[in-house]
Length: 578
Image 1 (cartoon, helix red, strand yellow):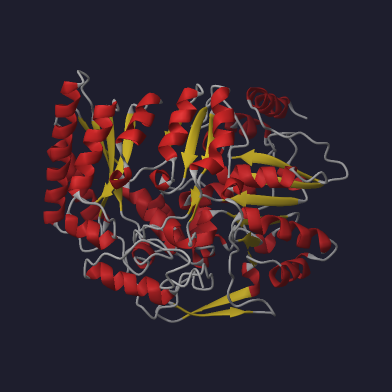
Image 2 (cartoon, helix red, strand yellow):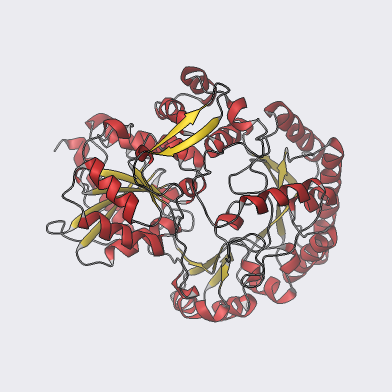
């Protein structure tokens, strides 16, 4: 082993020494799985999906699972110097030597990282040319649209890991003696949620549109990802504790999966239907156990403020010596008890998501949120002692006009004035941060047929907002980079013809040059309105929500009509509960 490779191992050991939760097993006599996360250690350690898969596999005595991350600024020079293949974290073994490679993909723009990691592992970027272990991908990105990654991996495990993972492992080991093609066929035929893209052929018309998607063998024409239906306390929780990574020293507890509010832009609120939300009692034991150790407790769901008893849970965490953090709050659900709990946990900033500045656009989005809700939430938080506010808005929404931007600017000014006024009474001047993000239409939402707004328009509107608000005292405006939002839209809405683009990005090309070299048109994938009858690249995946429901919600959006919250077990409108 070269000196540089020894240094990689030494770097891994230093990370592991600071961790709590890593599992070490002898690999001999066990089925070895490498679990790769296509981003750095700092990012991956905050991912609950990674933690769930790691725990489920290592809970089995005859299985072993080790992690691998994208080399970071510390380890990349060592990899480059030693020309070492990608190594696992726990044992610093080459990923290509494992029996199976699983990848969990959480962000579309990590597709290039996945390709680069597979190349560094010696497995190549193209599944059709690959030798060695199967590479199987899961996570929210392929659950929304697996097709852009179809050329990279041998298969996808679509579905929630608590339900999908172990049946897949049983099938995989049962048929382990088969050749690659036969094995993938058996998995596709016998494993719920398994999709082998090589067993399906897309056909495109002269206009470039997908017009047929054909199974090549006796495999299901539609893949139905299985969902977890167990008790609420069986949802995801942190496995690791580590200094440094964001949330790394926090005990994360998933208190709900999915969301019933029906925001029309939200993919998670649709693919995870029906929503599954526990109560505070379900999570009291792990939360208090973490609090008694002085660990910060992070509650995770699409809307933590919906959790019955959340304020009592937070108060008891504070009383036990811990601190509470929440992933998301709805302004219309913040009361004085919850605000007091957050202030008692030394929260300095609370994030709220109006998403749009005008009431008309919020109705279009089905936000069920008005200005009165926002102003009341701000007053309640500041009176409780939370001084700072972060507001999320989208720019480039469908049917957005300059008047809507006027109203966004005016709303921010009024909210900022309210923060300052109430802060003076507390003798602690608060600050407002505005986060602007380009609207990206996502699969399995009522907006999946909508185009992303032109980059020129998004840039101009963001610049206008920043110009008008940028010099206001106690107010900061930040925004994403629209060209990377465009790339996310391309990867969200694309098909398997994106493989050359992903390979170009993996080689380090910037998006514009990668588009040019690969011949991919961002206008075709990101900025084009899809017709109601167009066959969408993700149309062979069925999360239970009917296309008819999504289309009807798209029409209600055009009419700025609100739709009621999801009512599991009683409403049959979206078909997810059928």
